[in-house]
Length: 432
Ligand SMILES: *Cc1c(COP(=O)(O)O)cnc(C)c1O
Image 1: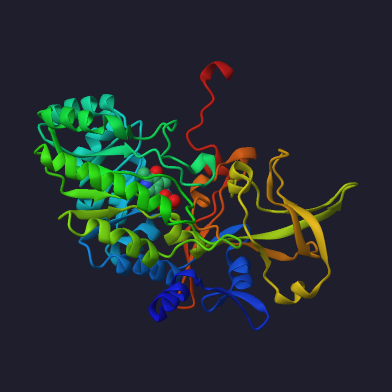
Image 2: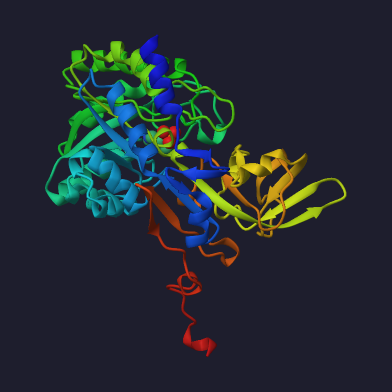
């Protein structure tokens, strides 16, 4: 009990706190970062990132394992380098992610390649890099992989992704393990597919993969899914298919508002006993739980607009910078950088950006203390699926990313320029 409550603190903690009347990231006032790099900007805490990675890694120390950080959650090469230095691998979903991972120095022997639509070119690149394995999602992909591997003169290591048909009880857009989902191979057809896979000359079947969704706030769906996988591994072994890896995906949720998701240790306590006698290496693909609460988006209030029905706070960040509220109706806590603002009277407001869309909001019907133009706000828990989903919509340059360590501000991605916006565009001669 004692141990669990300590690790609770360790994993829920992040390094964005009020000190001396203002919000700090580690030892640096966020207002100073905003002054130095401008707003909007993403700010990440090194200490939080490392603590989260180690909490996850440590929780599973009783089983041989590889953590393959799901880099789609945050793919800045500095973040990837940091993870790699901690011993992490990555879960990639495209050739672009493979490129980033290799640039960042992630070991190919710790890269797993997922996704329902890998192209022949991407498969070839990954085979050449000698990634640990492909997580295959359909028999058509299996055939394609077999052909490309043959043409390269190699054998592709493969885990088949099974769809355990389990409801993760999360947002439908981030729920991936139900029968109606595009992901994975139906559990009841799994044996057939594995038999096909092991009959292919250039395929080496090594694992079973599953990932049922994201932002899971209960441990039960994980347990149910792992139980199905364990049963399948048993059946495969009895058919002479030697499974060496079990990949249980990612999906552990974080606290955005008042959720109390299981901790990595809770997950480990629940699933380790099911896996420990299988004689396999466990692979995990956490994304959000590592980076989500390690980052914030800093924005400045531009205007206040008292509409007839409600009050709008117009800020300089928008849906193109952080799309989760618009896309999933996601909740992100909003905190003023100045603690004194918390004492002001509260109002019901929408916090909206400058983009010309009604769906452009960062918070809706939110009770916030009165803020005025020039006030700075932090959009919390923005480290995962934040910058990576940013776009240039409305020709807005993408914002900088900053990593804080030991009191120092490291710009790990510069703010885009107007020239960046038109990179690669040309006006054909007939328009001259
Ligand atoms: C998105 C994804 C993950 C990571 O999910 P999180 O909820 O961020 O942990 C892991 N594995 C696969 C296959 C994914 O698609």
